[in-house]
Structures are given as structure tokens and as C-alpha cells.
Length: 203
Image (cartoon, rainbow, N blue to C red; front, side):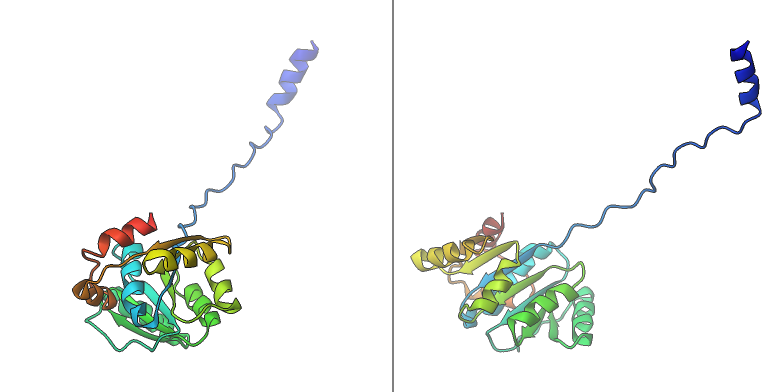
């Protein structure tokens, strides 16, 4: 009889609430890759532009240069690049859109970090074209991958030195190709013979 009474009592008692399932939240979008380039000042826009075009995969990207003169080269810019340039300019940075890219002149390594934080979901490529110091190494160590533009043992030794900061580092040998360099610097296209070494180094 006890079982019968228990069943009758249960009929008049509200059932226990079902455990609340966790609310579904969409996954966060992946963080844009953070790549830095070490190079000579005269190669900053071309090498940085080539890497940025490869990383951006069709979208806009910022090329943040420290240690070289501000960019003067400018091609007709896409709408997304113009929007990104305006966003960075509104935050006090010297930014100009060209092609699919935005050139940003940084006065200090610390500004390189601030620009990267301000680009939102657009990737940024930090181009350090001045001698390395402690501040520059802090910037390099904050990146996923560092490419050292150059050929031979000098570039390999520089990459090995950067790797000691705990970041992946590789040499990037860009052959002499004025047309490819000009197109990359203007943010228009990454073409041969630069496409293969850039995409290979980023793998």
C-alpha cells in the first residue's frame, strides 16, 4: 500500500523542474594571425605588403611599419581598406589605404601593439625595419610568427635569434622582382615570383 500512496501523492505534486541546460553561445571568431616581419627600411612596404596580402586572404589588412619613412605610395583602395584606415585614423594613427591594405606609420614599437589591438578582426602585420632592441623584442615575442626578410646565413642567424624569444621564426628569401615588389607595396596583388616564398614561409 505504501507504493500506492506514494503514487497518489506524486500525482498532486508538481514535478521537479528539469535541469536547465546551458544557454548556447556562438563560438568566438578565430583571432587574426599576428605576423611580424624584420627587414631593411627600404624593403618595409614591399615585404610587409606581400605578407599582409597572403595573410588577409581577400580581406583588408594593416601593415604597421616602425623604423622606415611613412608610406607615400598609394593605389585606389577598396571600401573595406578605406573603412579600416578611417578607424585607425580616428584613434590617432597615421594610416592610409592602398589597394586591399592600410599602411600605418608607427613612431614607437608600443604603437605597433596599439594598432594591432585596434584593427578588430582584420589581420595586422608588424614590420620592424630598425635595429632590434628590448622594446622591439617585446613586440616580436607577442606575435605568432616572425619572418626575417633576407637570404643566406645572415637571415637564418637572425631568425634563430628571434626564435629564442619563444616565437616561431623563419627566413623569407624574396628574389629581386621589381613588378612583384611594386604590386605588393601598393596592396594590389601578391604575384610570382614572390607568391611561392611568402606562402611557403607562412605554412
